[in-house]
Length: 293
Ligand code: EPU
Image (tube, rainbow, N blue to C red; front, side):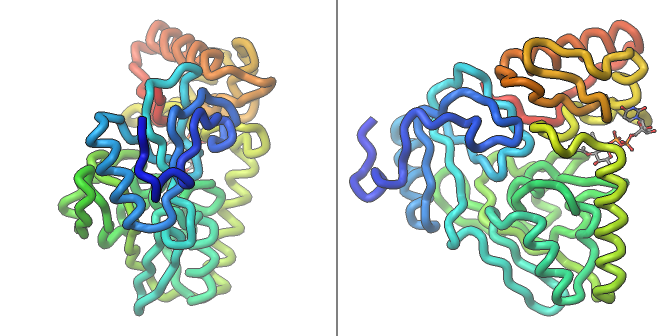
């Protein structure tokens, strides 16, 4: 593939995705681009379309399992300052897609704007959190989203309101777009209260979740009125391993990269757990993480 001259320095070939995912494993991206601004992103999108190259967007890589042998594609990571800005207007905050949510949260706390604290401890970018409709403790980020700025796969920029996005549990209608940034509507709250909320959520997370081993957080979505973690635990699978992948001893809906796991080890363990839960409870578990083949 012959990339235009102005893009060549932005594109790496055969980039190992283990460097870009919290699972710390994954195959290689045929092309991996780090655009510096919207114009470069647009050029990338147009070139990829021209060459029928599928595009995948990666944020903090905290919800992705990239298979060992990936189909030829262009992986785009928006990480330059052009995509990480955070700006305020009244009770609203705009976060660039590549701004890390912990940074957004701290900036909001300094302005005395609350509401996003439930997301504390989630290692996601604003873009990733919105596309996945990240949530915790019964809350979802979609409840705070006012607008999302996106680029479509023709390079056209659009400003979507929430009605146009169709958020569902841990999902959104943003798949046909590249998120450029998002506006959240927050509430004035005292900094003290925000600090308390953050501390409380981080403590609950530390207590119940495996935060120190490489993982992608919860693997499966919770089925209606139940918990995937509870079901997997009830099968007795905590500690179960295949190759270097292991069901966390702390939270059964976490699979950790215990010892140089290959993506195929994790995939096999996911399938094993899914089959056994189906056999024992007649429940179909659906993955929450995105599996890139
Ligand atoms: N449980 C077990 N064994 C386990 C894990 C959980 O019996 O190994 C039981 C718990 O005792 C509790 C129930 O299952 O009664 C629910 O567990 P928990 O409170 O840990 O929450 P969860 O439903 O497993 C969800 C989100 C998490 C989020 C937490 C906190 C999903 C799939 N998971 O987990 O999100 O952090 O609530 O609100 O919605 C993620 O998105 O990656 C993630 C981890």
